[in-house]
Length: 631
Figure: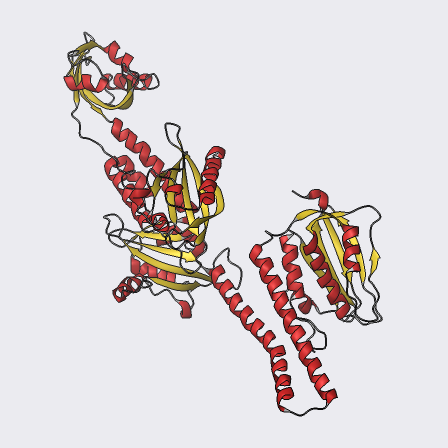
């Protein structure tokens, strides 16, 4: 961007071309949806990713709203309401929203960065950068801009000529000068005072001071300023001149110069500033890193996200050729997931595979990254035929997606193992019943084993379904309200199915009414799961105790048993799926109950805490928001 800004002062045309080409290239190759809308929700700009989603072309998007392409009226209404709210609040927002693929009818989810903009004439617009978060495997930047909106036209115009007789104060000029200033073509002479009167009030003093400096011999006269036309319009002009005649004493007698309309150039500079601001916003807010290379394949620009992802300072990579850059990035990688280099990515295009120019790499510890972890990046290369940009390297952080995939695989493996254990028992004893002649007591014993194993498998499946439903809905089915705690505990205790010979839990409840902000059914489920564990892991002759503590903004429900307890390491794993501190197999259970409790508490914006000592018992604390602090 520094290069862009420097060139804008030296040659506006070239600076505009460079900025336009860079912006167009970035947008053309970005996989994210990028669009601009006006107040009415009509597209001012849309890239190919948006056009593909809507089954049309970028050209057909312009001037139309979402309703022309999206059959989902509810989504279309939400889009219009939301962009107007963002434009009205004049504050950048990040919004999670849905859209419908017109080709497949599939609902896609996007995290959209919405940036309100205001044009010089006061019109409200909005820039939207939408990242497809429904596809974890393949999301790359692919920006597209409409060339028609970014086209700067600087028509060649002739120059006005002026000749100032300083002694008489009369200025003589040609017809083009009159045309620029909006005067009659035949008005070819006028006093200097009339010229001064045409100057914009804010520029007049500066222009006259520069003229006086030139008359005093302190250099040539040059000024860019505004002039007021008779119809109150403004015109920007570049005015240049010099003293060409002086008397014997050095007193100026005559000054001549030229006068050219630069209004289009000034308008283009305003547009350049706007597009530079848009480009800066895209670069700064993009979560993905990218590196732009010039025609010689030297690093030309890196965005802030690249530095965040790799820890490489821009000064350390800008100006490097692609080989040196590849070595610098590869040095950050472990041997088994090393960056192959830009040349390898580019050569892979000969294979014709869609994934030819993509590679997954890992980075060793990077500042801001969890210690001991590795950042996983998906790297892709896009080549360009533009004059100022030869190629762009994109880097997307997929560490979270990779971790989630690994966790899913581990979960499925564990779930299969846990289900196989009771299934093996059922299968084995059923086979014995079918093939062996057994006595009636033996048959009853085997049927009892099959029944217990079936009950265990049903419990695992039911709790898996409960856990999956809670995670999928993320609290959308929760009905939060102020729940009286004393009544909630009484209902849970009344519905508690006690083991044979066990007493009800003892209660220590506050005398004053206490309420918590919760979904009553889910809070009961969490309490029942904890109480079930308290009874299962404690001896029949011991008691279970329920107490309530209050602290600012929170209500703490404490459930204490006098059971076997846990070590610090075992307590730290409570809440992991299928984890059970008891490995003997004598205590029934699925290992999913506390996972469900942990999810329920998280969706209540609460916490699960526990303290335990081996042989001393365990205290589980369910920490809920207080009922009078909701909202």
